[in-house]
Length: 333
Ligand code: NAD
Ligand code: GLY
Image (tube, rainbow, N blue to C red; front, side, top):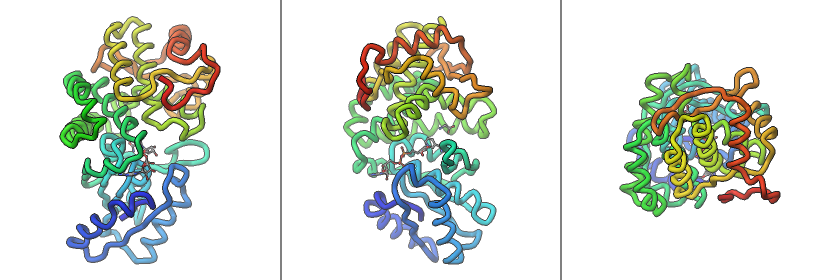
């Protein structure tokens, strides 16, 4: 079982007890916490233990934690002795609705996030919403960004349900959380089943991410949580979709209202459009330096496209704190 020093004291004992009923040997590997440790050095600690304890290819890796642990344990499983099985036990909302499903595994390289990795599907994902009770307060809205994203890109009926459930979700109502986790996994798994390796369709899962990555990179990773940046990025992408004459005004306004109701930022840092563009161009999903955007023709109908600078710059002026020279905070709404 692979976990980190924050999650281990909370949930490792119960999981170890449960695993011990089924496995001959259960070994716990506790890694340091944080995105900074999603690295070769930390990954090697997993291999050191597995080799030292002589685990062979019949071993099963179990990831207990958020997306950082899931991505790292999944990558370890993809390459240990040319591939072993793994199970995801995600304990953040983001991991339960997004990163634990779909088989993307990776570590970071100094040149970029998630640059070294593999597609490797978990045999099983067990999401227990009771674990979310101990999350730091900003993590729940950050996970909700990916929940509402699934509604925006794929299923207006699901969006209606999530929008109505938002107060209950923010209050950690177990039934509402279970509906959101199940609904998001159904939508994400449906997309991944059609396009596992991101040849095309899977890119729609990156709605809000081109703008969001620019915000994360420009502020320095960790200033805004990924979900906070994606929340704001979705408002920007909806605004751009509206300016292109695709998304109706009321639907773009709905995107902003839902993001705000999820307690996520709806206004980006007040940088020049040129600075945003340069930050987008280093986004790994950009091809030939020209950013691609996931936009909306209607709610539930995404379209991936490059755009002219003029409407993009209009969006960047309209959705960022252009009039405010202070640095934007994580709740810059
Ligand atoms: P995280 O794993 O860093 O978890 C956030 C914090 O919450 C950490 O400090 C963690 O120790 C703590 N934590 C986790 N569960 C807890 C709990 N139940 N109670 C208390 N604290 C808890 O962050 P995250 O948002 O879960 O994941 C982000 C990572 O996921 C990034 O590395 C990103 O690249 C990756 N990701 C991967 C995919 C994918 O498809 N594979 C998709 C999205 C994001
Ligand atoms: N989080 C985007 C994807 O899984 O493709």
